[in-house]
Each structure stands twice: as structure tokens, then as C-alpha cells.
Length: 250
Image (cartoon, rainbow, N blue to C red; front, side, top):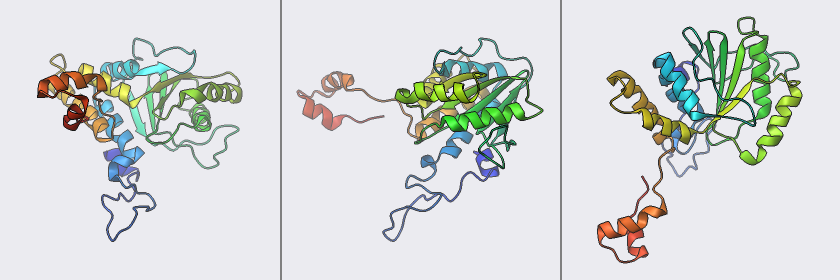
């Protein structure tokens, strides 16, 4: 989470509350660091930037899905070496609501392609924020005219996505980039599938770190109720109540 620290995104993290306080301190959460969004973004995507470009693209493509009826990410990564920027300050584009700057979580400049990544943890995606970021990156001279993909990580409410996409298309006058979403749990599953003997040890360590971060922030694999009968047999218990007493979520 070095980037989160350098960009002052850690704030004051409350790891514990003394004197009977309720933990409601500005910039803190009762859970401490794992209740905050920016350290999660930093921890996961910093490490993605350490991986070879083709592997980073494979992970993003494997975890992402189109929003609406748009296209999926191409199978082949862009040419060149990606440049990763965390919370870059962009000048607002035309018709922007922000007057000073626009700050996407991650901006990846990759050949003729730009990836805009907006991550949410315990809050919801805002299509107004997407529009501001897309306009800002298009207005920047270094990024103008490049193919843009916007990736919303976490915070998607599927019941609202139709209206949200309609707003994006309306306000961008149908000049809409590729819109994708990634579920944190889906990213975790892609990382689990990669961690094995096929990766060099250094890359495998990076992948394991990313998966461990997602676990620490609560995006864990669940043990479903379908596992209870097997558990009951294993422990020699004869009824569901006894099985439940021995069952734990991992």
C-alpha cells in the first residue's frame, strides 16, 4: 500500500477504540485498515503493476465482464509497456462538475489504450464519477484520442445498472468507451486459478499477496450449507444441530 501512503490515502486509521468510544472518528473505521477502500485499491493494483504486462492483462480480462451489451476486453494486450498511475490529478474536461481536478483511482497508459479503474469497497459506484473521469482523461493532451476502457471494481448494484448506463450514454452523447466491471470475489477466483507450479516463484508470490489482501478485506471463499452433511459424517454427528456446532466459515 505504498502508493496509498504516498498519496495520503490512509488517513487516521483506528485500530482500536478506548474509553468506551464508538469509533466514529473522521477518516477512520471500527475495522481499522481493512474497512478503508484506498488501501485495498493500492495493495491489489500496486502488485498487479509488478507482474509482466501480458499476465496483468490476463488477470484483468479474466476477472472483468462487460457492463450492459458492450464488448469484452480484447484477448491480446496492447503493444508497449504499461505505465501505472495511482490517484492522478487530471484537469476537468468540458461540462465537468468538478472545478479543480478529477482523480481516478488508477490510470494505466498502455500503448494506444487507457484503462481507468474506479474501485469501491463497502460503498456504491457512481455513474457521475465515471463520466467525470472519462471526460477528464479524454481532455488530457497525453491521453486524447486513445482507446479507453473504464473498469468499475466493486460497488455495482445490478438492479440499477440499466439506468446508470442510460445516463452515461446520454451525457457522453453515445461516445462511450468500453465499460467493464470486476467483482472483488471474481478477481480473487482468477488469482486462485493462477497460483500454481506454472508461474515463476516471484510472480506466484505477487499473486498470493493479492489474494491474501482480498481475504483480509473480507472477500473470502465461503463454506456453503451443502458442505454440512459431509462435515456431519466426518465428525460422527447425527443431526444438523450438532454439525452446526462444529462448522465454521473460512
